Amino acid sequence: GAGVSQSPSNKVTEKGKDVELRCDPISGHTALYWYRQSLGQGLEFLIYFQGNSAPDKSGLPSDRFSAERTGGSVSTLTIQRTQQEDSAVYLCASSLDSRYQPQHFGDGTRLSIL
Amino acid sequence: GNSVTQMEGPVTLSEEAFLTINCTYTATGYPSLFWYVQYPGEGLQLLLKATKADDKGSNKGFEATYRKETTSFHLEKGSVQVSDSAVYFCALRRAGDDKIIFGKGTRLHILP
Image 1 (cartoon, chains in turn yellow, orange):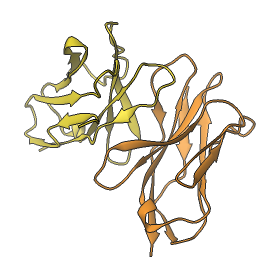
Image 2: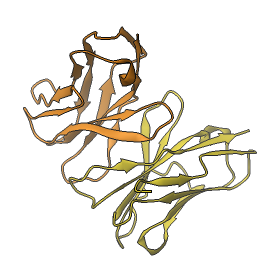
Image 3: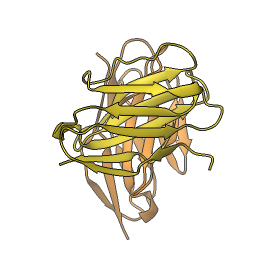
Image 4: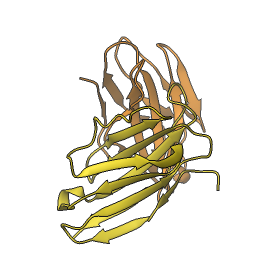
């Protein structure tokens, strides 16, 4: 497929468990973004990767959230000791480079914390 | 700070009606402005954009004009279709920045 791929599409887990969300960007896209869409809220920026530069983590809501991007391609967003307020749709986007290029979004992972 | 405010939904219209979804922004400098659309069950898609004052973005019959004087980027369509039912997000990206700041989204229902 040519688009941004995210997995799983749905994840239900118990409070306190750790979860990993995966994002496969479009091939050749050097910029990768994670966003969160909570019920009743707008989209919230979480973290941004650009090539080999240090990621911009300014949007991560707490130290329970972390993300990595291996080999400049696939990215994993990890949430440790999940809380109910972490329930949201987590969206990944990629772009050809970081400036003036449209971001292409995946379909998201719907995370539900019981 | 930088922010985007758009009209709350849901907005319900009949097919062929005229659509306006209001969006205003607060930002330093000269941001780029965007409308994204999320159709049911799908991810976000870029609908249109404008990068400087007085630019008009257009796509699929939708238009929005970058109004610096009123800090607005209202989305309009002359005749909506049932297939336009979706959630629409207004967004900005500051000059020299890479993050996009989104509004809360407006859900649009078009009745046949």
